[in-house]
Amino acid sequence: MPERGLLLVVSGPSGAGKGTVIEELFRRRAGLFYSISATTRAPRPGEVDGEQYYFLSKEEFEQEIAQDNMLEYARYCENYYGSPRGPVEDKRAQGLDVILEIEVQGAMKVRHNCADATLVFIMPPSIEELAKRLRGRGTESEDVVRRRLETSKAEIQTASAYDYIVLNDEVERAARDVDCIITAEKLRSQRYTGGFLA
Amino acid sequence: MPERGLLLVVSGPSGAGKGTVIEELFRRRAGLFYSISATTRAPRPGEVDGEQYYFLSKEEFEQEIAQDNMLEYARYCENYYGSPRGPVEDKRAQGLDVILEIEVQGAMKVRHNCADATLVFIMPPSIEELAKRLRGRGTESEDVVRRRLETSKAEIQTASAYDYIVLNDEVERAARDVDCIITAEKLRSQRYTGGFLA
Image (cartoon, rainbow over all chains, first blue to last red):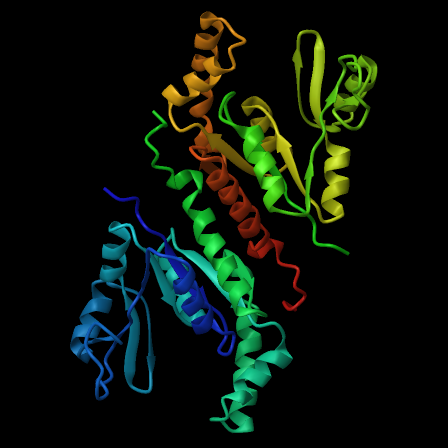
């Protein structure tokens, strides 16, 4: 039986660069599985159930909630989004380390719902750099960017509730840090399954 | 002011290969300091105070114990051996990560005396390999080797009290593991000093 994989929650404020750090992490390290979210929003053209999302009806999603099958979920714009527990546990049982890329509020829920999750906060290098990144997308008005920045500042205050804080001033270094965190967490004595301890 | 360094205790049974793993670790990583023990035994020719050991008189050593200046100590063959707290704290304050290579009993004392120490247990790959290594030294009788093996088996049972267990089946991999443990421990949120959290 393979050693049970980790559940690694990668979170942080919008603009911190979670996605690019995770992409680089997948290039560096094998044995990872990127957890796919469930949603009640309609699939867009080309989207496949179980690839971009698990597409559920509102009734199905609410049943999953009722059965405690969501590690975390939230509702935006009339639609549910969440992290189904089943596939996460299946992949972990297969020995894969599951990466859950979620927002700060979701991360705190996983902390509560999954005692052995490892939480990593991706920290932007500075508020100035964060503002630059949010503005750099060029898709939002200055007003929206300012509101996002305020949210980000509030989210940064939750970082101390995470297990690890990784500064994303340089994507390769940040990915290497997360890589080391996974290696180290797998060496924790409570996870030791070497069979050498009687 | 530099970020405070770690105190990394590297321990494990005799024959586990603590010393070779640490040597390889020093080749891989900068910013480390190898903690020097204190002893009351007489210096041998060529030994220099503060290099191989801090050489203390029995009275001096007992005064250090009385003043709680020893992170751990033990008495063998009429002589004291111990790890002085002062140099460890000085080097940590300078931002160096201090490596303390000690026996299992000493490690448990450091756990008790230094709440923020990180404890790594170096695990031999098997009892058979451990026996081979102890015999390979060729300096001890079979009777002594057998007694050492019994002690080692008992020490292995303490591994779960450590933070991390590193299997030393291959020195380079083991050193890389310890390297990652240091990197990860420095990223723990309670050690975050990035100044970004208000």
